[in-house]
Image (cartoon, rainbow, N blue to C red; front, top):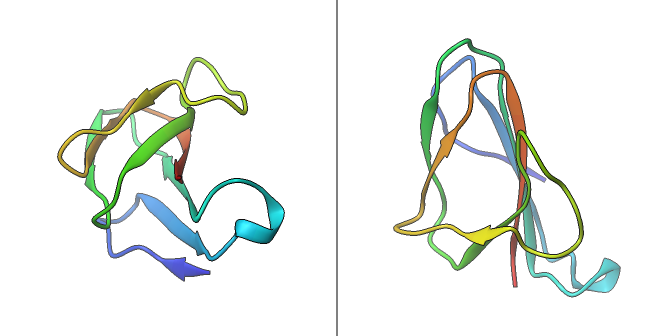
Length: 82
């Protein structure tokens, strides 16, 4: 597990080399505890969202473009790298 270098009070970590647990290379978890939307720069890769402030599941909701993601206020996101 590696914590991501993102602005506080946002929290993010990257679980790498998780292939033995499922079909993904890496999993990123992001938490926005603030009352405002925040933008987070992600590590280079092809990231897809599995969970956001409205929906969660095992099928990707959408793909992240330009290695940046906008986090809704008071939310948690789960992203995967396939």
